[in-house]
Image 1 (cartoon, rainbow, N blue to C red):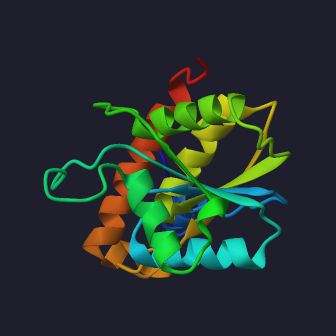
Image 2: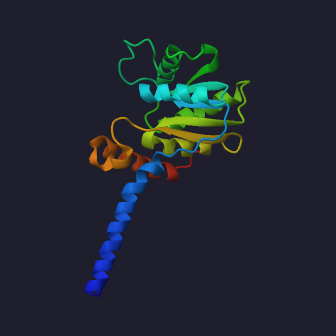
Amino acid sequence: MLTFQGWVIAIALIVSLIMLAITQIHPFLAVNSPITADVLVVEGWVTDYTIKAALSEFQEGDYRHVVTTGIPVERGSYLAEYKNFAQIAAASLKKMGLESEKITIVPSPEVRKDRTYASAIAFRQWLENTDIQPRAINILSESTHARRSWLIYRKVLTPKTQVGIISIPSQNYEPQKWWIYSAGVRAVINETVAYVYALIVNWRA
């Protein structure tokens, strides 16, 4: 049996661990670890402001090429000119001023689950059939999705291709205070569960 002093110490320790988890889980998921790379891979599902950040990253970095990835759109495909997120991201970059010859669209097939994995496989297949042979790539994702994307792309591409990751912060909440925003809570909980799932799955194919 713990003494009163022991209970106080135990409770204080538990509270400290909870606070540490709350403050550290978001930066862990929204990881930034870019490397020197000549190809920038943009996940096509991201928001317009993240596409704009991708353009800035390309212009300020030492990149030769941009690749946009993404699955088919789930709504409005009968009305829209573009049928997948890879096309939408590429068209957005062109509209913002990026030259067409520097952009390659690499869509992935329609899948019911493991969409990031499907995009990574499509990208690897493109690498195997293109003259563009990057020494390294950076994946550009958004917010808490970054850690999972980084994990899956590294599983699929290494050791042949080095992979870095860039996370653009969400504008729906303050990352430093994610727990006071419903969007932040959803993002952290969903991506924590998804990341644990990604850890235990054998992604190499």
